Image (cartoon, rainbow, N blue to C red):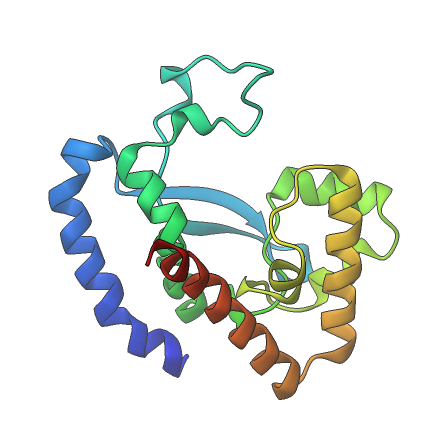
Amino acid sequence: MVVSILCLPLFLGLCCVLIVLNPFWNPGELFYLQRRMGKDRKGFIMLKFRSMTRENNIKRGADDPLETSRITPLGRWLRRSKADELPQILNVLLGEMSLIGPRPEVFSFAQTYRSVIPDYSIRESVRPGMTGYAQVKQGYTDTIEMARRKADLDAFYVRNMGWRLDLYVLAGTIAILYAPCKTRQ
């Protein structure tokens, strides 16, 4: 909670900047809201800064399964810097998320994964996090096999949670955030 409160000025400042830039490089709503699976299988609305055009503006295709063609110029920067995740501090303040824990899964995906991945539900016994052990160790997942590996990493985190592992995740997250800046120099 303390860290989230300390991040509020950064969040509000970024909101002010994005309100000015959004009409030019990211037309549309400022926020993206999505139903995610929370602790004890309770759904909640996760907040992000919107980084893509509306779905009906672009045709989907097999050659672009991640829909990268929908990412706006400002959205590309938001994603690269991970600033699109900053609104989740409000989810933390509302008690729906934690700073560190398994990343909340899209509600419908979580229901599917629970039926095909053994012990998937252990990750739902704790509050989801803005960052997590699986994100530091593996990153983004887009296949069922990667989802299985992510579930294993999340289960490891839940079974071994503590301040040391949280510091490891925090340091790993900072290293990931710093890495793109380092390669640009």
